[in-house]
Image 1: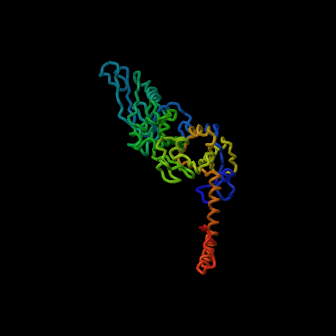
Image 2: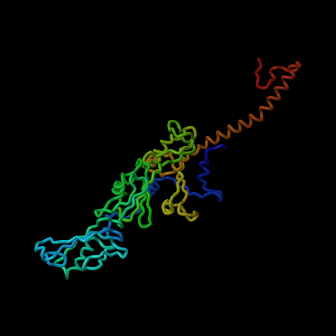
Image 3: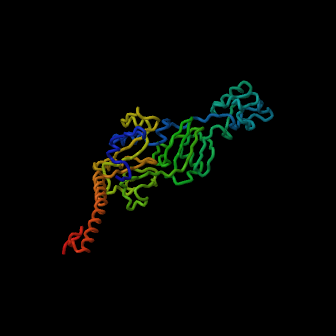
Length: 390
């Protein structure tokens, strides 16, 4: 029979075609909802280290300023005619950390700066001068950071590389320094790359779930891009008032996240005269480790993503409670199968059409013969097929 998708019993029977894509069928239960809730794309899930950023250490190319103090005149740097007064100092011209990771200090030689903190470099300078200068003290300042940088790219108002803040900054702080998102936040995605590892989350997850607004370390890359989240709806979907087209449509979230109950409402609900309320199916790929937690035998599947069809039963009154906790994902596909009675009705209508197709020529021929006999006067008008005598 003509249909807009697979029959519900075909989906439940599992994949029988060896040449087609295998899938796993999962009935939505409270346990399934809890497992999926822990697996939503969040930065907090990908990066477990939520401590403040590590101390800034100097690197090759950083521009440093060094000021050296002596306790009295007549020492290594302050001439004796300058008089005896506390706070005598000189400032060495700014210099970059060279390719070997060193800076040069008069009378102290090369001082290792790469990989050291400000305090460590200051102490190294003092140790090199303490036997030659009068109670030397050193102050090292970072004039221009060229190694401890954070890259903010993509759909921000001012893409740039910003210097890391020694006080520690979170993802939203750094995005704000780059001017903030250039598009509405509900359509923005944030990708964080650190040490070759990437994680992805909606921008709204950083705003509304502060645990995802983790600390940034220098060397990180933040990339924002705009991708409006949508889902697809097929089958016995109601379209009255939905405004998204007939039977199948890509429907925007228009929010940073949606629940299945909301998505079904945005699609117009289920067609009362067509839908089987126990046969709502949601198509989505699941990571292998998540699929195993759902109780799926992953041995027959290849690759890291397992095709999963989730079955929600709305004949169960509690199904609507579960639907308010089942979070939608970008590009999810909802399919609602027809009720069995609808398929039976289709078949009966089909038989009626076949019967009519067969009977109509016979009726026409019979009537033509009777009409011919009437003209000859050898038949009664009541013999005409489909007429009633008067």
